[in-house]
Structures are given as structure tokens and as C-alpha cells.
Image: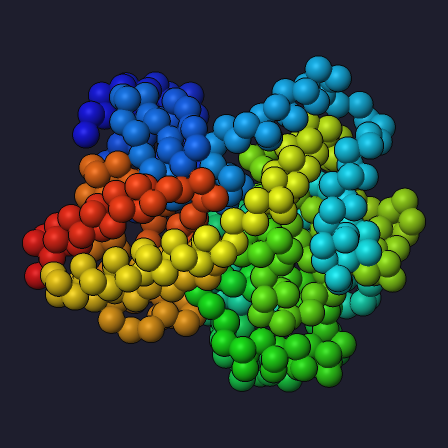
Length: 432
Ligand SMILES: *Cc1c(COP(=O)(O)O)cnc(C)c1O
């Protein structure tokens, strides 16, 4: 695997960008080695500056569910560009994308577009507080909801359990209203509520967790959560930034039977351009300015180019319905993992849901942040670089979800299966 050009560019990047990147995971810290620089993407593949081709399981961390350079999407974005980029007044495309979201989600009457998932989530929290008149929120350990101060607690890394900020620069005061519960553990939720009676505005949850690796909630947990929230007048914010339109045309909330009061979006609804959104029933959304007194605004919110990309992406998804294929491809990869793991005596747990999948290098079932943290990250690093060598691009961290794209071919899947077998052998050789 040639990396000379990436190395040269990374050296230069480090001179001008913090750590050579604009988002930390791109620096490959947890797997070591030189991060690759991408030149272009097409279909299921990306190509780096050294001419290496990779089947792409990162998908820009989610948005590129149709693969890269989708013909329809590119055409519509290119056409939108001819009409100008931003106006500071409403454009019809904003209404079109909003209509798609509202008509697809039973729990949403109105939507507000913003520019990222982070923005969507912190606005949704503000809305929940405005609507309920209460301040506290519950978040689950290992779930990530963007980098707003209030939510940088137990956010999928190190410092879990108590509401200690997991970033320097976040005042203790900013997280004092953030209460932490454990995923898949209803007792932990009840305890938190018991200790903060009548003060909790909302709980926020990833309906399928993706930011500690892929972790599924049990049906009993979801059912109990719904009941407990309702019984205590606590709003449920379902953070679908990762899961929205990913495993069905709609939300993971429909698939797991969780009824959201407020839903947040990002990633896929922008198709690769910066878009986030939050939506809810009328009664709640009426709190938002200009209808209500909860202020939230954005110079580039509803940007026509981003909207065009989102509309084209969602329409293509709806028409092509890749969802049954994701299930087939996911099952194929799961089988490949377990077969190779058994062959070489490596312990692996594969968690998957629709187009999301994570192989955890551990013998124990992964159901929450504590069990995810037991995965062997050194084995993962060996695995990661062996996969890269064989032309498979994965998220460079054990605690991320891989994403399938609609354009992956049987050939891509076969190549991935062979790579898994090779990488698993390298893991067995390096760690005994
Ligand atoms: C990615 C993500 C976010 C943050 O979105 P950004 O666009 O990166 O700000 C929030 N919540 C979840 C569940 C995510 O996966």
C-alpha cells in the first residue's frame, strides 16, 4: 500500500490545520499510522492521492448512503448551483425537503433546518426546555449527540458515569443539568428520575446507537422507556442524525417502536452537504421563533444547494428502496466475520442494524458503553490496517459504525469477505 503522497500532504496539513484535520477521528489517532488523503469518490469506492482504491464503509460517517457522485444527485446539485448559492430569504426547495420529512414521519408536523447535527440537537434541547419549562435532561452513556457543551458528557469515550465534562473547556456549570443513564438499563433511568423528580425536561437517545459502535436497544428497554417518560412528563428526543433514512425510508423510531416528541436529523438528509434539522408536532414547534419565544436562527440555514442535495438524495432513496439489500449485505458480512473469527480463534461480536454494522473484538455481548469498552482496540488496529491493505476503508476506530451504501456490488462484498479473512488471520498472528 503506497502512502507517500498522503504522508507529504499530512505533513503540510499539520502545519496549517490542527492535527492536520478538521474533525479529530480523521487523524487516525486510535489506529496509528498516516491518515489517507482522499482525492475523489465514485460509486462504492473512494480513491486516495497515492492511487489506492478502497471500498468505502465510512460513507463520510453516514451521509453518502447512495455512494459517491450519484448521477441524479450530482445533476440536481449542479443545476441548483446555476441559480445562486444563498439568499437570506426562503426558497421553494426548503419547503420541498420539509414536506418530505413531515410526510414521512408521523411524529413531525413541522421542521426547522439548520447546518449540522450538533446544531439540530442543541436546538432540540433548547426547545424541550422551552416547552416544558424544566431544565434537566437525561443522556445515555456512550451516545453522542454532537459537540455542544451540555452534551459533551459520557459521549462515547473515556470518562463515562458521572456528569463530568468529557472535554476541557466545558464548564461544570454547563453540564450540571445533564444526567447520565445507561443504555439498555431501565433501572438506571428510573433512579435518575427518582433523584430529580419534576425537574427533567427530556431524555435524548440514539434509537440505534452508532457512536459507541453499533449497539441495539432491547424491545423491553424501549417499551419501558416510553412508559417511564410518559409517566413523568419527560419529552423523548430521538436523535436520528445517524439513523434517519438509513434503515428504512423514515426513522429507526418506527422500526423499534419508539414514539418521539422531538426528532433530530443530519447526515443523510443533506446527502453530503451541511444540513441538520429538528422537528416535532405543531404544539411543540410553535414555541420556536418566529411563532414562539424560543430563539434559533442561521445565516445559511436551508441553503438552496444543501436542500437540492437533500431532496435528490431522499427522492432517490425512496424510489430505489435499497433497504432490503442492506439487510442481505449486512447478513453476508456478519457471516463472513464469524466464519473467519472461528477459523483463526479470534473473539468477535458483530452488532448490526440495517445498513449499520460494527464488529467488536470481544467475547462478551455488547449492549451498552461498558461492554463496548471491553473490546480489544489493539486487535482492532491490526485488523484496520490489514483491511486497508486489501482496499477496504473502515472508520479508524473500534467505536464507530460501518455503513453500507446502496451501490455496493456483490463483487465489493466478496472482496470485503476475503479481506476480513486476511485481516482476521493477521489479528490472530499478532495477538495470541
Ligand atoms: C453525527 C452525529 C451528531 C452530530 O452531527 P454533526 O453533523 O457531526 O454535528 C449528533 N448525533 C448523532 C447521533 C450523530 O451520529
